[in-house]
Image 1: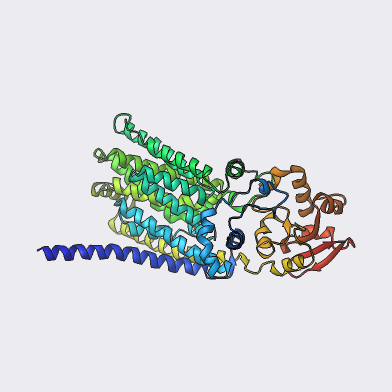
Image 2 (image 1 turned 90 degrees about the vertical axis):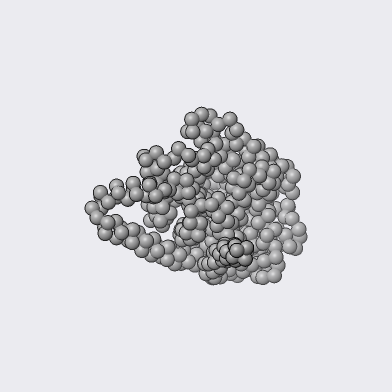
Length: 524
């Protein structure tokens, strides 16, 4: 008998490992397929690759002098410091741009595995199924496939949730500390603990009275760990001013209506979100139906406070990030995982055979027959499968529409050859800067990373730069470029030539050096 028990246990252990192996291989294959190109959909990848390359050569980058008409030289903080540390071996042993793609595959696969592990650790229903649902969510796949720190941030979020639910407050503080070093969105750890504190109190109230032991320790742990991460930091104290601009003025206030900020800060169209993410939203609504059905048949009396608190927590999170996604596309990578987690917790605590029968009987009244009911289910399964396959193919095509590895490489070579060290390039668009920076660190530039950094430096200079680059400037632009900006080189991206080139094309004060991909002028 003992041998039989051992064999049964070994079998289930193998099955558990098989699940991790299957999901790991599937995730690695999917993300490798999505990364297999010499193109980046987001130009920030060039910045991350170059900063990591500079770290290999010179150590921690603190003297950030390349964007002199922004506040960054005074407050620069590598707010993705641990992300760049992680990239070091990939950038060292591969071409930096290829290395960052390989690193993205590792990071994203790691996130999917820890997401699956979290579901397993919480004894959620169908953890593999819900992991596949997340993997098939096109908007989420696109965001996480950008060569940025998004995936690493999600790994930290999952570690925070594991520590939070296991009541490991010491480790929660440690994780929060390193989250500050890893990602600029670190205040999210405090927000998660704060929301859980509220939900723990609400759960006690629902169960008949205010809970005495509110979950205040996780909130204290995340706040303490985050504060320590800010102070015990390679960039302290200038990081305080940096996060004031990055977190409050860019993320919260957002000057998108006044200046051109990054595309990820603009809203995600509601109908596009529904059309690309409808399977997850559908499953979330079905989970809500089971929750409502369980309440109607009063099968929830034995549900504990922790169960209710966690269900409220994820349901609230998914609702909050749905609204935030409609405000800003960059929240997409949080909405979908939280929505899937909300589904799993709703079904874990509120799915029952009685609730299923109750809902099925009500649907049968609408659909008239068992056959119609099965046909609807089959139709949904087919449409979800088709949607996932189509979504992955669409994401692959979208990722191929970005910026090639050698984008503006030749133009920057010409600019460097015709200028001195630290000469300033007056360039046409702030979001082209990462590519210019990657190919040419000899010169300095006007603005990059986010237009807000220049807007906060000087509204007057920002307006002059914007008016010239948008083709709206009236008057003689030459003294502005030469004296106000001290520029010796002008670079016009190919997409901006129609707006901006009218100032230079027939003016003998500018000498055309290059005109294949964009244009490079030198001031006479």
